[in-house]
Image (tube, rainbow, N blue to C red; front, side):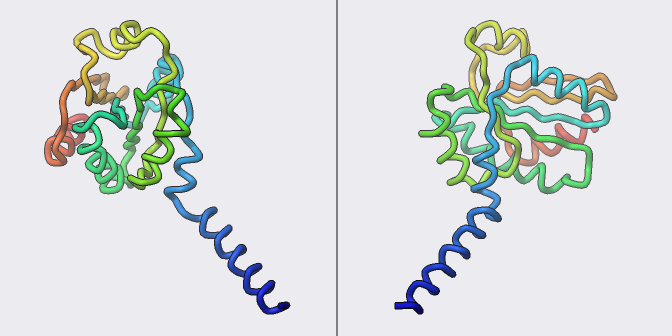
Amino acid sequence: MRYIKMGLRNVLIILTCWLWLNPSTSQAQNIRLLTLNQLESRLAAGKDTTFIVNFWATWCVPCVAELPDFEKLQATYSGNKLKVLLVSLDFKSKVNSTVIPFIKKQHLRNEVYVLNETNQQEYIDRVDKSWSGALPATLMVNTTRNLRQFFEREFTYPELEQTYLSLK
């Protein structure tokens, strides 16, 4: 019996360490709500950083299809001053039941937020006046070069990479 308890104890220790070190698990725990004021402050504070803000939702098929490309872009240019922010437009009430399991399943490593705004038309207009509200949508900002571009479409990786490199 003593050996069984020791074995179970070791399994629990290993499982605890794996959960703590597994990036997909820890990423899911870092999902935060984000207002547009907070997003704008973050963009303004990153004077030498190019930000790519992808607006997406778990129910949006083209959004889900392009998420790996945003992950790849951040990984490819990790040594550059690039920050990819994934802003989910899923309802706040769906964070635990839908968004977190989705993030875990997709193994997303970029920063993930859920937009915390109540007036849809107001936040759409604040992001970009040309935005109809369709997804996916991507905002690219380089404050050093005073560049701000908005795209209401799905990207392929080559298009995403080329657009990012044109902002650097």
